[in-house]
Length: 444
Image (cartoon, rainbow, N blue to C red; front, side, top):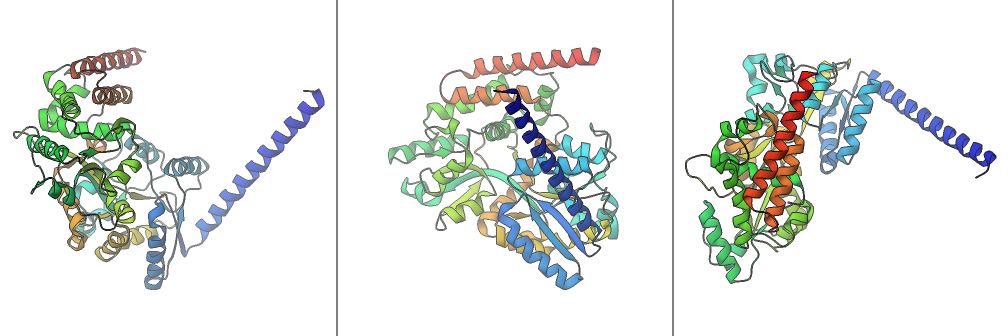
């Protein structure tokens, strides 16, 4: 390459960078102008399946309250998250938005002054707004006294729906195998697997190519086998992953493998493909979240299925599922329209609007008074909220690097590469490494 051509390329890159910078400044200036419009609320979101419904609700609100609401969609979720972070840095956040990342990120937004404390609003009128929600829907936006994030205790977000993750069963396929009732215990589930195999019907499918879904299923059985306190003690480093109870959790997956209960290729299957398998009746059971109701309705409107808790191993301890707020909105603390924003969110989460949202998008409403109008299948997901928990509300969480070894280890059990004891030892070694790193950092 010649010197002159190198200069030309450098100039082109500079001009491209300069144009991009001007474009971003233009966008940010546009956001600022919109912000100054005292009769328009701007809401950013990532929910591609709800834009049309949000626009219908915005029109209704304008007719009732005389306030325009503009929902701006940015997807996919990782692009949305990057946009929110960039907007926070440039201080051009909209009036209302959502924070998709872990609770630590939500805490950092609050600490930086980007998110309004809504506690007083929730407590008004004897706590009427707060009481309208499922408690577990509010929990992910709640910071309690003495929280590890050092955030002032309070409620900082407004849930608009909830989720729970359950075992689903195909009613027609179970009937073909002569199974009259869905299994409630692990022994009953294994008996159902044998009955299905006799008539050539595959059993369980799930998106276990995605580590978080493996982690979720394992968490269900950890609660059932050892209980919450022992799990938290493990995360604190007080109980090793070589403990017999953790080996029993890993053994659940080994048993499923040995009994031929798992769909072929389950450890490489993304959840969207697992959803296709269940919707097209290529498997009798699925492990999936309440969002699947809308997905299955598009894929196969005639699908006949129900939802149950994953079959329990231990009768003495409850099996806990992951559940809680699905999507939440927060209010920009710097917005000059905070009062209008809060008023709109109260309206959006009232029973009438929550019923409409649920019917149009097939999601569980965060408002518990709206749950009475749910379809049969959504009602089954809603009832399971009594058994719900979520990592975002646990007092302790495992280190992400340890979780990665944990989830990959389970995948190796499923494909027959390692035994439960080998995986327990692998995870414990990873845990020890992380504890040692933490100790070194604390000494510095």
